[in-house]
Length: 350
Image (cartoon, rainbow, N blue to C red; front, side):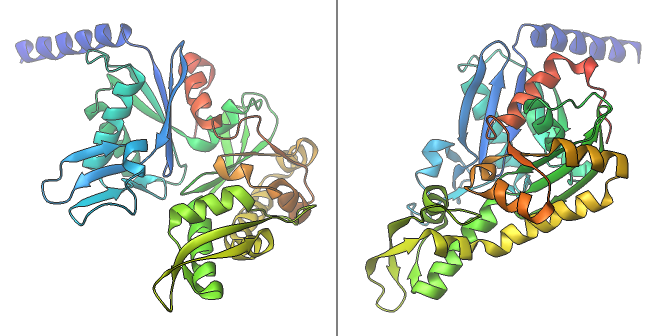
């Protein structure tokens, strides 16, 4: 028994030594995209959370940007898949391969690097799912791995005073989940999470174009439409683009115009769900903290925060000022990096 204990302690000490030689790493493991921040180097990687897999041998063929280019263009034997659905692990082995590839890329493929890693995860996931994320990171080469709730990471990354006795509301809308939280004194006081976010908007655009225009487009095209002309609130000057897809009647390729008004109508339902979630969170917030939010406003983070007019829509529906974080796409990963730097200064509670 004593010999076994010595071996275990020796392994732990060796792990700490290797970890001390590696640069700490913060990861925003998103449904749509993954961002990696490396200590003293900044954001070293920003790639789609997509893995191309041989469905027969289960061999990983490509990860990230290379795999995303295969979406919708692969032969039957190759599947370009997202190993995370709605912010949680849907395929453990593929997620592990994705993390290993991204950790190696961010560390310039130095095989001996075994960093300490903090990963942002949705606040609504279970303890089992949290442990699965940590285990996937360790299996992918991390010396030590821990998770932090994405709303807390986003609030830290957005520069909100999370450690002060002031109520701050953060709304983090990513690809798979929308997280709403009120934070004070280093803890999440009120939180709500829903698995409706950017991907549901893409699906809504696909369904609208199919139903109203009788044209079939893929989700990748829908995402491009959302980015180019999507809006949550009427624009001063409405926009229009030409989209291309497959005619549902003839089966032949066809082009036709699509307006920003039509896109706004397409995504009205998922936007309504998100606005309702924010209202419910405000309703559940203690009066003193709610007053702070009324005075200080709501901060938006995540990729969907860039949707035109989203701040105006939420402000109009809640009568609360709404602001977009300086860089909403990187708020979570910056928050994980700051959490690593000042771990003792942020006594996180759930």
